[in-house]
Length: 310
Length: 296
Image (tube, rainbow over all chains, first blue to last red; front, side, top):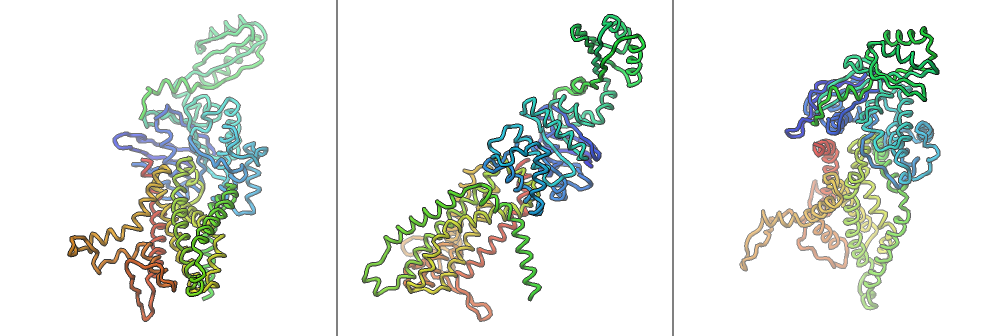
């Protein structure tokens, strides 16, 4: 759905994007991570037809973003990191304005607006003024505006920045719902945990270069990052700890005696993880939960990046 | 003939479809109803006071016609209002979007550069016309007071509309260039100054010679002044009203094409209409490229 090949962007002598190539398939959620100034927003602006690349190409659903920007805009929804809203408008007026801009027939607008408001959980705010909404609601309204023409591809530049924990959770739930609806989502963030939870693939950008890219599991495996396991039992704590310590793949064991929880890292594949669980059960350890929290993107990020900016 | 009419009708509808979101946004969604009521009424009161001050004495009422005199005064007010309001309202249209950081989402909203420029121009044009709309009964009363015909009144209003469209399109164009509102207003002032006085300046450079007193004077070959709106209006009012109150600096000659004589103000109106399309076309063609270049 999204194909970027050998993309370069120069600002004078500064190289903002340096030979960046990546591919995002239909229905994927691709998260781009990188420090501030890494070139994430420049890449997104090129994808969104707001900026021309110095070299290379970018296509969305086979349409070249440089040659046919208006066609790309018809199938893409873009949410910028910093955006303004028409604060004097009511929520439904705001959405109706953008529906009219997208040439959605007048008769269909009402139903589409109702559906979008329900999806973004803003139905109760339908007649409220945009200026009176909270930050989280404004973010959701901007996303609602982005969805009004039912785009195939969503490009979201730091959609959860500046949100409180509740706002982040709501935004995450909304993005997961959009993924379920089959949208291809390209999302940037510099908050690693935010992406790890709902992205199918990730790319790490530093100094304008794509340092790492691929499915999260593949990236974790390829870069030797530990899996973080959380184990909860209802007894036999000493015996459980002994089994864990005997396993050579287990490291950094943390024991919470009161909660009867073990937290540890494991550098292994799925088979070895399964074998450990089997050992615990056959040894009579009363396990009530065994949870793989996955690879830690923070570890990989710290491993592959050097703190460079473009 | 029917085919041409249906083509024009369908194109007009398509144009309306393109500019409709902007018009609806400005006049309905923004809830500026108080402004739309108070501004025209306020201006009507000011104009009425001005006209009351110009009311002729009983002697003039007997020997002179009043309608053309009032029409001239009304036109001067209209020209000043539509020029300033249309141009400055348009000059703030895109730059204020930039200041509010809404231009990016507007560009991504499926609207083309033409939709944005035409929509903003139409909005400012309608706003300027809306402001002077309550004056219409006063203008339409002029033929009843004598000295001017309805056709001349409607001709004047038509030229006024063309000029207003030119100013609003130019205002949107300079607004596209500026990032801040104050820069856009400064550019609009410069643009107005250039349009009104640029012709004289060009003539001074190209067609001037020193007279016996050592002063530089434009020669009879001077042509650029004929495009100044000041000259156009002075010629129009001088030619169209019987009272001859407005004496043009230069009498602009009419043009005869295929046996038909076109008065100077008609030619000027065609020139400004063509300029409007040219500016709109240039804005449409270069807006995206310019904004991307500014991002660089």
